[in-house]
Image (cartoon, rainbow, N blue to C red):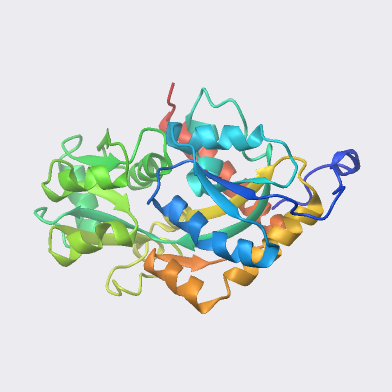
Length: 320
């Protein structure tokens, strides 16, 4: 899940111009996660549309490690020549700067932000064995048993960790964080009640919900999930701040990339996101198409970064 303009007139003058028609060579979209994950799938989804319109091959390059931060740093340091882009999860851009003390770049200020590709809701689920029928029941149970239950994250310092710490702060419960290597890795322990709660996207927990192994309690997002119409949003049950915890995927470029390139990429991605086939494929992943402008995207990023920085400080959430 953008402030006025990135910079001063001096910054604008420093931005390189295109010496030849763009693109004059294949494009790379760098992904900080393994093939088959949501960020990777989103990048590969838009690649064919870019190739069709721009006339150059698009290569998706997976540079995994450090919750996507290695890929972020790689693109920050790449030449601003319009050939290298970053497909990110929201957490890479707006959470990591506040939780990873060894992060050597600031993705908010050291990247050009082209467009948000897609945005989706997330679902708080509990093990089905718990005597909780709704989120209020879970909060009450946790308060009766302080420190005895745990929640699962997809990695220390990532967006799931920060979002669930935000939930802990907002509800006033005492619950322990247990960290796993990715969202899929935590699911068996959630289903077996080794951990009692987690936050996931619908595609990750769909079969577990259908088979009655986990119970969806709350939607974190702008609206109810169409496939779970009975599950309320956080706003509906009295925790509106939690609905600002966004699950989005975006496209970025090295700082100083030509404005003409940024605008053309945003235009082409926006056109792709209006294609029925792409809309349908995003829906399968639990995402709605966005395609906002660079200015709109930057404003959203700055707003979220400010919020998540506050949450990280309140929770004393830092990874060394």
